[in-house]
Structures are given as structure tokens and as C-alpha cells.
Image (tube, rainbow, N blue to C red; front, side, top):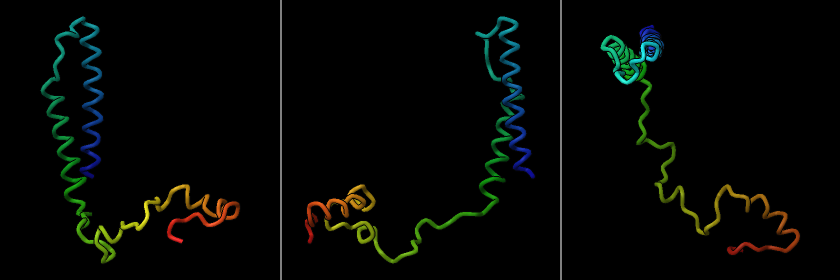
Length: 107
């Protein structure tokens, strides 16, 4: 619920800032543009509510240091040859093998 309030505060502050900018243009004072204090406080409170209740209190943090497999980085991404594991060569290899023969370096 407080995430929604924070989001609504940010939307309202954006609309207020647009209206204030249009007012300055109408009064021909666009060169004296500064963000009013009430809109600035509304932006800060809305951002703080979204950050606190949207990120910190959800507690959906995952440990990025635990991997589902026991391989190290070098073992998981080791390639004995320089071919890309998901490149076009794997798709075209069967076609070329039928026309030319086996062209793989390892075989």
C-alpha cells in the first residue's frame, strides 16, 4: 500500500512540475526556473517510500554467490576449441558436412 502511495507521490510531483513550468512560460519567466521546495520534498518522499517499501521490505534477496552447480567459472565456460557454443556454425554444420564432409578440427 505504501509503495502505491510513493508511486502516486512521484506521479503527482511530475504533474505539478509540468504545471509549474507551463506557468513560468506563460508569465515569461522561464529563465528563472527552479524546482519549488514542496515539489522537491514530494519527489524525495515518494522516492524514499518506493525504495524503502519496494526494495528493502520485500526481502526477495537472493545470494548471488551460490551457484546451482559445483563447477568453477573456468570449468563451466571452458571450450577446447574456439567455436561459439550457440553460434550459426552449429546449425550450418550438418548441411556443410553433407556437402563437403567432416570439417571439424577435433575429428
